[in-house]
Image 1: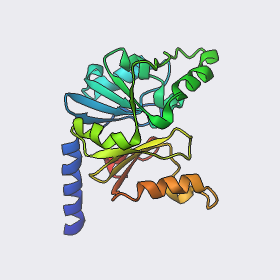
Image 2: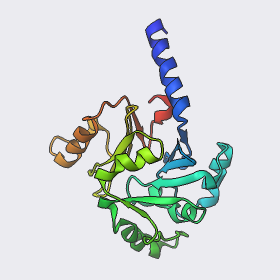
Image 3: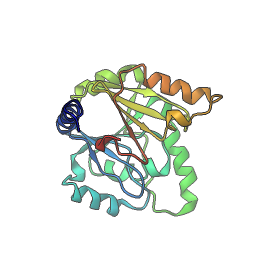
Length: 212
C-alpha cells in the first residue's frame, strides 16, 4: 500500500470511528446504527417474527435495544421494517417521511395473511416529517445531513445523506445496473450525487462500514 492510499485509509477509519456506524444486519440485510444525541438512529429495522434474532445481533455488537432513539425506514418492505413496532415498544420513535404515509398499513395488509408473527406498526405515534424539515430535525440529533426521496425500487424509498459524504440508500439499484429507460431511478441517483458522496451504505451486499 502506498503512502497516499494508507493516508486515505487512515482518514476514512477515523471518520467511521468518529461516526461509530455499526451494522446490526442479519439474514442478508444491513441495518445501520448511527450515534446521535442520547442514543442511536437505526436505518432499517429487521425481519418480521425474528426479533429475538435481531436482539442477539444487538448483544453481539454491544448495543442495547433501548439505545435506539429513532428508526428511519428506507422503504416499507418486510426485510426493512419487520421489527419496527417491537423496537417502538422499547422506546424508539419511527421517523415517517411525507412520501411514506400509508405504506406501513399497506405492508401490514400484505403480511397479515402470511402469519409471520409481524407486529403491525402503529401510525398514530410516529414522527411525521417533510423532506424540507429533515435537515433541521437531524441537526437536533447532532447529525449534519438530510433525508431525500429516492423512488425507484419502490415509491416510498428514501435515502439518508450525511454531509460527511455518506449515503444510506436502502434497496435503490446500483447506479451502473440502472437501465437507460428507468428515468425515475436515474433521477434518484442524480439527486443523491448532487451531494458530495464518498461512500454508499446499501441494504444488501457490500457493507459501507468496510469501505465497499
